[in-house]
Image (cartoon, rainbow, N blue to C red; front, side, top):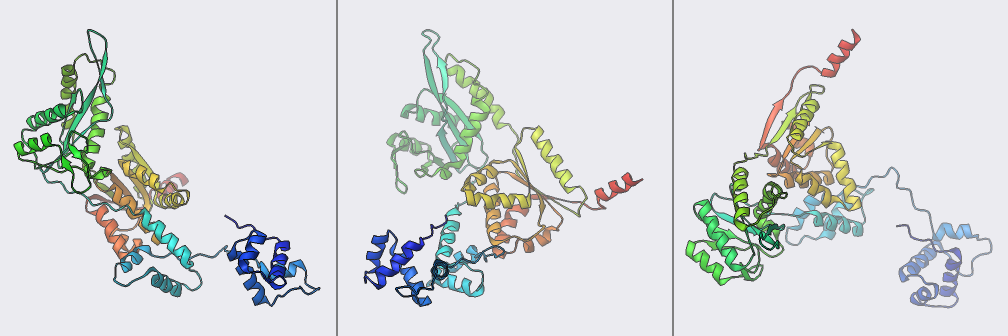
Length: 452
C-alpha cells in the first residue's frame, strides 16, 4: 500500500514548530496529525541537508521537496536475492544461532540485492507458517483398527406409522489393508457402540492390537490430548478382547486419517448407491450395506505408483502422458495436467493471493497429476520448497506422471539444493515405473512427410 505524501504546507509548519516554537517531536506530531516517526524522519533529513528556519527566500517548494521527499529509485530490473530459508532453518537449530546473524551473513553475500532485516523476518515467518510438517504413519498388519461414524444418516421408514427415523452408520477400517466394516444402528449411544464393535470383530474373524476411536462420549469420558479417560464400559470391552484403546487427540484428524478416508469411501460407494432406495427396517438396511460391503472390499488395490517418461524432444513423451491421462479419465479417475513451469508459476501466484493452501489441497486430492517438460530450467529456493510440499502431500495418495528431456540421473542437479533434492526424488523415484523413449523427433518426420 502506497504511503500518502505529506503536503508541503505541513513540512514548512513542521520546520517552524521545531526551530521557532521549540516544540518536542511528540508535540509536533500531535499538532500536525503525523506519527512521531515521520516527524523524526523529516527533521533528520532537514538536518542532513542543512535546512534551517526561516527558509532562504530563493528556496522554492520544489527545492525543499527534493531534499525532504526525494524520489525513490525505481525497482524495475532489480531482482532481490531470495534467502534460502531451508538452510536458515537448519542453521537455527545450532545453539547460540540467531536470525539477526543469519540476516547479516545474507546481506554480506548480497550487498546490492538483499532484503531489509524487518522484511527478511516477515518472509521467514511466512515461510515457516507454510510448513505443515506431518509424521507419516506406518501401519503393520493387524495392529490398528480405526473406528468412527459417518456424518450422513440413512432414513428408515416405519411401515405402520410412516414415521421416518435416521439411522447412524458405523465404520471400522484396518490400518494396513484398509479392509472395511460398516453397519447401521439407531444411535451412537454406548449400547450401539459396543454392539457394533462385537459384530465388527466377528466379521473380521479376530481383533486388532489397538483400537483408535474418535472422542465421542461412548468411547471417551473426558477428552485430553495426552491422558484421556476411556469410558469404563468401553475399557471393559478392550480388556475382554485383550486390545488397547488409543483415542485420537482432540482436533487432530490426522491421528485417525484411516478412519476419515474409510468414512469417505463408505459414503461414496455404499450410502450414495443406497440414496434412492427406501428401507422399512434396520435389518433391511444392514442387509443392503452388507451386500455392498463385499463389493467394496473386493475392489482392487490402487498401488498409486508414479511414472517417469524420459527421452529427447519430439519422441512422444507428452502424447503418451496425455493418452494415459485420457484413459484414466475414461475410467472415472480425476486427472490434472500442468506444464511444470506453469505449475510453479501458479504456486507462486497462490502465495500472493492467499490461496496456496487451497491449491495444495486440490493437488493432493487429484488421483493422477501430470507434470510435463520437467527440468527445462533450474529451480529457485521458493520453487524447491513449493515442489517438496506438492510431492510430500501426494506421496502415497496419488500417482504423479512426469515427462522430461533430462535423464533421471541429472534431476538432482536440476533441483539444486542437495537436501531438498534428496527429499523430492526419494518420494518420486522409489515408487515409480520408468519409460525411456528413443529415436528421431516425430515433428521432424511429420514435417518431412508434409514437404513431399
